[in-house]
Image (tube, rainbow, N blue to C red):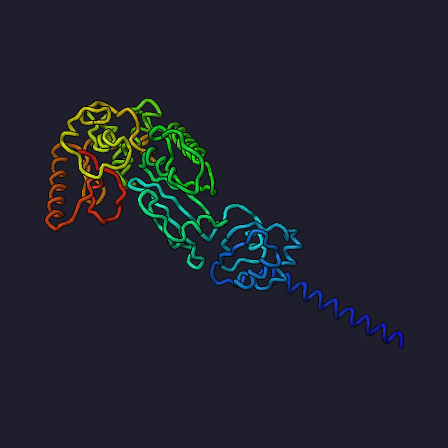
Length: 409
């Protein structure tokens, strides 16, 4: 009898072990298998949340198939207490180990709300946007200009949320005064900026910041980044350039930046100015004259007057030889590279072609034909009631509205 009982107990024990082994094997397969999410999921980890809460949330959102298996796996990998506060994008089909890594790795949030303060050539705008997990694209929810608009309803609530991300984007061609003026209006930054940095010394780029970040520290980072870019590109400059110092390269690059918003023609534009300098010709470029009038404090917003073109100022390159005394904007890396490695062309002239780009010429006769075509475009637009942007040469309303002034004729 006892043998019979022992035999049955042993059989039951083996069955239980087999069942547990199968259960463990099944759990392991579930843990490492492709996740159930058909599209990306934005998962918010609240401050102080524990693994049990988050695992249930993940299961409800369809990011994982089983909350219990996820918790056991996290415990096995010793990550039960490793959750990081924030909002994180979990890609479609992510396995549980991948999800766990995303939620415990730390770093900036990868989805949710972002506030991007865009400092442009014409204006600065605060743009609030949300990442749509299904499309992985941002959807804009709020946009306003802090200098002229009232703060929209809902902005402060979003800006004060713990996991909102902040970014400051400085556009190519914006001046140092414009950058500082805009930064002083950013409510999510703190501290003072005592003076406007030298023109051209700020790197146009996108800077991720945190709420309460110091304004002066951000400006220091912009200057440091521009200094590194200039030093790097100066070491790899072409031979035979009519510039002797990195500072002169920055001046030439700023003129290239303001002359064209078309990336493909930066090196051609640079070649025109290099050719003029090499031949002892004056640069004769409108953006430098404009800078002499505005000193970078905003845009002129109209065409130049004859009296302004005739006035002798340090920035009027119709009246002075060589480069102006300082940069006229903050050039981006591409314009600095174009100034230091221009195309090898015979071009001496260029004029707007009506698209935001330019028509280039070698001889004065060729240039005059290009100018005549441009004047005809202007007359046709005027007859049709279409306004021409005085700075870009493009029809108002066309793309490239933030490109800068075209070359003087």
